[in-house]
Amino acid sequence: MGGATQDLRGRTCLVTGSTDGHGKAVALALAARGADVVLHARNREKALAVQAEVARAGGGKTPELLLADFASPAAIDRAVAEYLASGRPLHVLVNNAGLVGLSRRVDEAGHELTFAVNYLAMFRLTLGLLPRLRESAPARIVNVGSDTYKIARLDFDDLMLERDYGMMKAYGQSKLAILYFTLELARRIEGSGVTVNAVDPGPVASNIGADNPGLAYRLVGPLLRNFFPSAARAARTAVIVAADPALDGANGGYYRSRKRREKPLDFDPETSRRLWQTSLELCGLDGDPLPAR
Ligand SMILES: NC(=O)c1ccc[n+]([C@@H]2O[C@H](COP(=O)([O-])OP(=O)(O)OC[C@H]3O[C@@H](n4cnc5c(N)ncnc54)[C@H](OP(=O)(O)O)[C@@H]3O)[C@@H](O)[C@H]2O)c1
Image 1 (cartoon, rainbow, N blue to C red):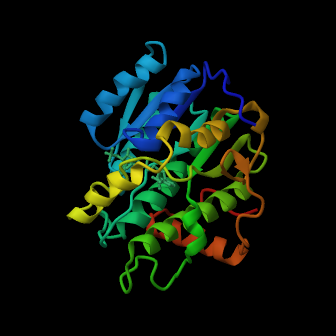
Image 2: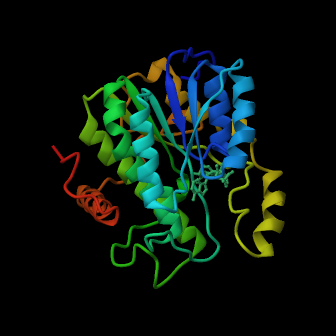
Image 3: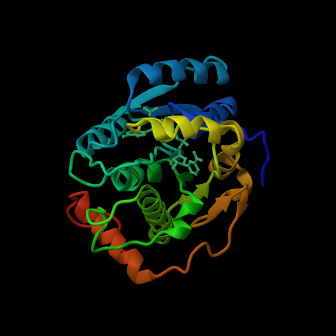
C-alpha cells in the first residue's frame, strides 16, 4: 500500500468538512491525483477560499461546492437531494467532518452535537448518497474515525449524554459509533461494488475544537499543534484508503498509519444491530433502506 501516484482522472470524490485540517488536505491530495473533487462545507466564505486552493492543486479544475451545516438534518437532506439531482457520479465519499465540544451542545433536532455532527450526519448522508455510489461502482466510502473509540462505550440509555457529559466521552462515543457503522455497513453492502472502511489519521495539527467558547482550548490548541503531524502528512492514510488500487475490493477495514489494523474491536452483533436501528430512528428514517442479510 501507499503508491503516491494513483491516477484519479474521471473519478468524482466528495470530501465532507473540506474547509480545514485533515479534510482540506485530503481534498488537495485527491485533486492533485486528477480527481473531480466536490467540497462539502458549512461556511461559504471558507469554502470559496479552499475552492481556489484545490483548483490550483488540480491543475485549474474548479471543484464543485456542496453546502450543509451538519447540525441541521434538513440541510443534510437538501445536500443529498442536490447531489442526486446534479446527476454527478460518486466514486469516493470521504466522511471527514467532525468536532469536539468542551461543553454539551445540541443540533437542530436536539441531539447531542458531537454525536450528531460526527456520526449521525455521516449515517444520514451516506445512506442518502448510497444509490449514487452504487450506480457509480466501483466506489469507496472512507469514514474518518479515531483511536479514541477505544476509551468509549455506547450507553444506549444515555446516548445523548444528558446525564453525564464529557468532551472525550462524547468524542470517543461518536468515533465508536463510526467504527460500528463502518463494520455494519460493510456487511450490508458486501458484493455491491461499493466498499466502506474507516481510518484514524492519528494526531493532526488542525483547528479542531477552536470554535469552542472560552479561552482554554484557544490557548492549549496552538501549543499542541506544534507537536502534531501536519494535516498533509496525517491525510496520507485516508488518501490511500480512498484511492490505492491495491485496496480494490477491501471492505470493512480500519486503517491507521497506512496499515490495516486487524480486529479493531470485539465486534458485538447485537450492539451493532441496535446502533443501526437507533440511528434510523434518530434520523427519522422510515423503514430500513439496507436490511441486514
Ligand atoms: N485533529 C486530530 O488530532 C484528529 C485525530 C483523529 C481524528 N480526527 C478526525 O479528523 C476529522 C477532521 O478533523 P480536523 O482535525 O481536521 O478538524 P478541523 O480542522 O476542525 O476540521 C473539521 C472540518 O469539519 C467541519 N465541520 C465542523 N462542524 C461542522 C458542521 N456542524 N457541519 C459541517 N461541517 C462541520 C469544519 O468546518 P469549518 O471549517 O466550517 O469549521 C471543518 O471543515 C474529524 O472527523 C476528526 O474527528 C482528528
